[in-house]
Length: 116
Image 1 (tube, one colour):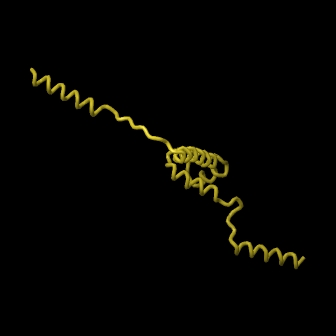
Image 2: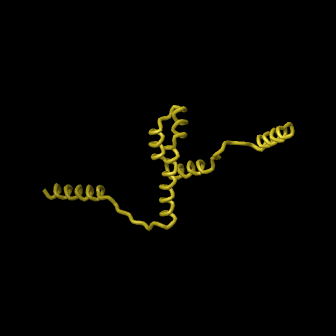
């Protein structure tokens, strides 16, 4: 009987030790707090970009459901959202003109003014 009680007490102790969740506390630095809020802002910026009509049209042309794109953005890590938001900020609004294109446009403009 004593042996049975010992094994019951030992099993109970093991179960309680294994199932007890460990709590951990740590200080949150200012950089970590700022990074968290920046990630939220960048995630909102990417979401707003995907809600634009021209972006929805382009996604539809590529065969991507805009709602599915929003879900995928929600699943991105903070680093991936940061990279994507950086690419959105660096996009050119008027297109992609190279220096050769600008020179050709200037030459055409000069020729038109000389002819007229």
